[in-house]
Length: 338
Ligand code: AKB
Image (cartoon, rainbow, N blue to C red; front, side, top):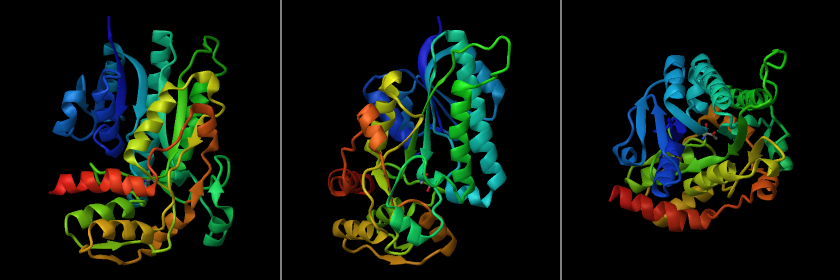
C-alpha cells in the first residue's frame, strides 16, 4: 500500500509556507513537499517528507509516482514577474516545462489510481494586460475572459499554463486509440498581489506592498518603486490559503470554469504606505519610481470580478484591508521582528 499524500511544489515559497502550515495544523492530509531550496525548519514537522529537488527532473517525479498515491498536486513553484523579465527563457523553462512535467505526472497518476488527481494551480493577475492607464481605470473590475494579453514573460507563462491545464484535463492525446476519458481535475485561481506576515516575496512586481511593511517593521528605509496612485488588488495570505483549500474541496459539478479570479481589497500604494505608517510612525518610506516595473503594474487590473468564485465555491475573503493590517499583518510582523 502506498501512502495517500498531497504533493506541494515550491514548498518553501510564500504560499507554500502558509499552505503547509494550515494543512499540517489541521491534519488535513499527509504532505510531500518539494523545493529546489531547503525547507524552513518550522515547516518540517508538518511534512511527511521533504525532497530537495527540481520539477524539471522527470526521474524524480517518476519515483514520486512509484512511492505515493497522490490525491492533489498544489503546483506552487514558479519564477515571479520581475525575475522572469531578467531571464525570460529560464522563466519559460521553470514556469511552463515544470508545469507540463507535473501535469503529465497528474495524468499518469490518475490513470494508475483510477481517481482524478486534483491539480490546483495558482495563476495571477499578471495574465491580464491593459494597454494604458486610461483603459485600466475605465475597465475597473476585470472578468476572467477579458484583457488576457499579458506584457510579461511570467504573465504569458501563466495564461499558457492555464490553457495547458484545460488541454491536459479535457483533450490530452485526443487522437490516441488507447485514450481514456479519465483525466486530471484541473482547478486554477488567479491571485492578486499577496501579503504575508511570515515571508517577504522575491522577484515579484507586486512586492512593493509587502516590502514596504516588512522594511518599516525592521526600521529600514524603503523606496517604493511605483507611483503613490498605483492601484492593483491585494490579498492577505490567510485568505489565499483559504481560497486554495476551498477550491480543492469544491464538488466538481459546482465548478463552471477552470480559472477563477479572487480578490480582497484594492489599495493604492499610498494607502499601503498610510496603513504602514500608522503602525510604524517612524518608518522612512519614499518613492523612487522604476519606470519599467511601473509599466508592468500599470498593465495589471485595478480590480478583478470574483463573482464566479463566490457563486461556484463559496469564496469570500475574511480580511478587508483594515482587518488585514490591524488583526493579521501588524501584530504578526511586530512579533516576528521584535
Ligand atoms: C508578481 O508580482 O509577480 C506576483 C503576482 C502578481 O503574481 N506577486
